[in-house]
Amino acid sequence: MNLSRKYLGFLFGSILFLGLLTGCSGTNNVDASSAKLKIGSLPIEDNLVILVAEQNGYFTEENLEVELIPFQSPVESQSAFQSGELDGMVTDMLIAAMLKGSGEKLKVTSLTLGATPQEGRFAIVAAPNSSLEKVSDLKGKTIGISSNSIIEYVTDGLLTEGGVNPNEVQKTVVAKIPVRLEMLLNNQIDAITVPDPYITYTVAQGAKIVAEDTQGKNLSQAVIIMTEKALSEKNDALIRFYKAYAKAVRELNRVPEKYKELLVENANIPESIADEYQIQRYPEPQLPAAQEVEAIFAWLKQKDLLKTEVSYEDFVQKGLY
Image 1 (cartoon, rainbow, N blue to C red):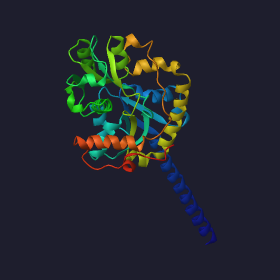
Image 2: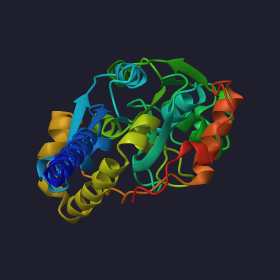
Image 3: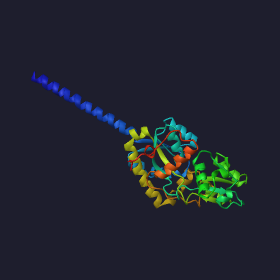
Image 4: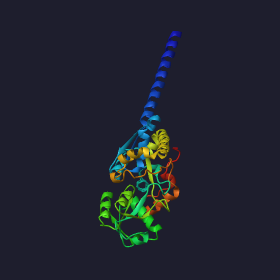
């Protein structure tokens, strides 16, 4: 009888031990799946910090796999994000706000550029040999833009700061930047709004900057957004992601020229300006300022592009760094 009890006790203990092992194994499987992040990106400067972190093994140091998935257009990346193929995406704050307003379950986790007006330059550029020199000269002139976009938002902001009502210019929708550049350089349009490196490229071809957003209000911000599912299920992985990201920011700002080739290869820098093009300073992980978020919300509401009310607190995710 005692022997039977001992045997049963041993058997029960063995089952309990195996159960604990199985439980631990299950937990490890969850952690392993959580240690991979899939982030969509475009061939733009905003991704450089992630590329530096990947190249230098900073994500690996944090026991994290980050798959940066390239897309050639914002429409493609947004479609992949909305279909659940991605954990996150590098985009601009206006797209992030429109997606949030349409009901997408997402939050902004950080800026990539735009903590100060000097980061992520946009400009209204006049055609070569144009007489346009200041914002007031743009009244009645044609400006090539992409509609309902960060380009149009910045255009309206620069015009307003220069004392011109956006309704006093003729906005011409030219969605593709290469076509916009060609029209400007062939004097088929008075001016266009573009970000760098296209500002630098057009100026090298004889175009003139009429207004840029590096002074005055901070108009343009690029951000990383994450799905609420990723924020819930992969929170620890995201904390580790931002540890690696912060390390890459410090390294990049310390020796920017070391990463010129990496930038040129991944950010559509025209070959003709690659040597002279300067890598800008990148911000440490931080959230966009409330006033800049609210300004975008107000503009979207004015254009009836924000389908539902969104608050700053609902839009951003705190506590990752």
